[in-house]
Length: 290
Image 1: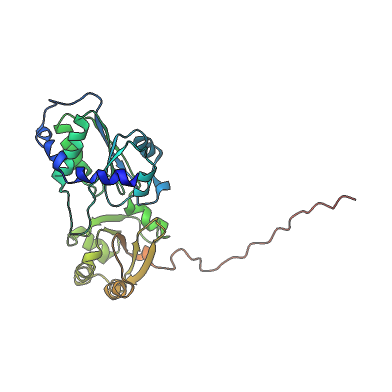
Image 2: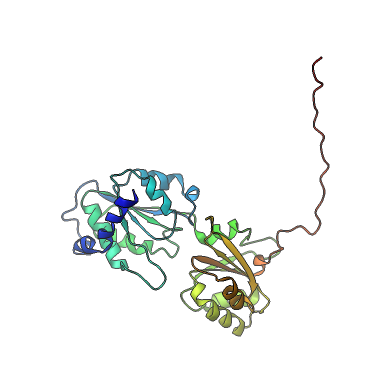
């Protein structure tokens, strides 16, 4: 199946998809009845975090246009006739630009095919799902969205980090780590009024921490970095705003990772102050038969 997936790389060049770019400008001319697009949120990576609706969409697909992240191992379990088109991006390397991905979705659907666009996390949380929905609708292609388990919420939870915790913090803010922190994010860290969740921020750790401390945030504010959340390679690195850059360099933090800034990232948050020993209940063992 992975071999057939590699044939989809011809599609990922955008050469076939780019022919659909003329169609993606609008109108329904040339569309074969029955074609459609489903944007599927695949969750943080573990296959068992896919929703039932996502599984059903994949089971009915003629072609899957997939990202690099998410539960890509499920592609090997698809029927042999399903075409796989890889349009995955890596940091700083986008071999298939977004406009070409849009065109591929439209072109494949106009051929009467059931297209699944498999994404990591949730399509509408930094997944550019809104742009793909717009492209499909502009071309007259039926499109629906299957929500996914967002890595912004699930990865911290899998690492034992609650984004909100009674008596500690009652709100959280999710931001894109490719850009400097905005005014609201800086205020949240400085005033500790909300947990800050940073996606795609590994390459900007130095800039982000410097910016936060310069804005008045306490350098002792707890930070946790969760790499490859939900997978067998998951790793949690804890530090503070003042020590994060050095600590990340020491252990070799790499993307994909979710960065959590705030008091909920403290390592002992969910460790009881006093461990209460529960009474041991003796089991009733029946007398042996004579």
